[in-house]
Length: 323
Image 1 (cartoon, rainbow, N blue to C red):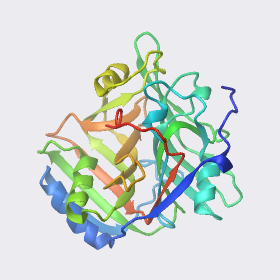
Image 2 (image 1 turned 90 degrees about the vertical axis):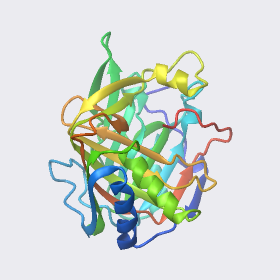
Image 3 (image 1 turned 90 degrees about the horizontal axis):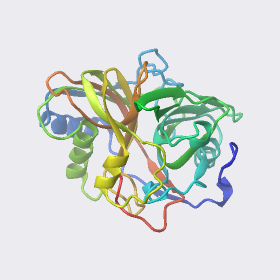
């Protein structure tokens, strides 16, 4: 593919469904109850979002308010069993079509724009599009490099609006406002942090589909995370084969993870949870679970989404590669 190649946004299929939007105070109680089953200490409150542009968070906008929306583009069927290299998407154009006029703030997880790295890579997305369509890209890629297969974290330039293959974003105007402020320490259960929240919501709301997005920070401890190796030249058909192809690392705190969760697929073939983290060193990748339950500390700022938009949903789907 050429360095400027991308799919024509106007020719992609956009589908939209409303989400159930409980009050933050209601979500507070549900999530705290779920977390206390899985962590020795947990607290959830509703309050003003901290300035996410502050150095410890490192985002390009300050808040998570204003037209909160979940977006999923593409999906694992475009990666597995063999990559479909034409699946390059312009995030700025897609989010503009969804959010309409004004500023757009997007955070989340996807496959990175492989042409700029000459390799498959993870994308950790943190970007804004101004009302005049100026892109500010604070996103990163994480790539497996060299004979020692080191994790290399690199900024994506503001001249690069693309992702590849699959993407899960939380969209907003980046406005100040109330959010769910979550802290959890010392994991005692088997569920990872996001799984615990998502399953707690699913158990409570049943067929009412609830979606959240934002940031969580692993402040202490370490996490089991993967970075995709370069595209496989042989077909990958099972999760065992996926795990042989992925490169796993134990990544130390601090890790800042961005992404989305939703309680049901909503007949849109949605990925139920997807968070990628960056660091202030070389580490970045796809969050699976912490590996230091006795000392781990999580801090999260999440908001509830009003709707979900599905773009370029694969017609032929499968459930491989969705952990």
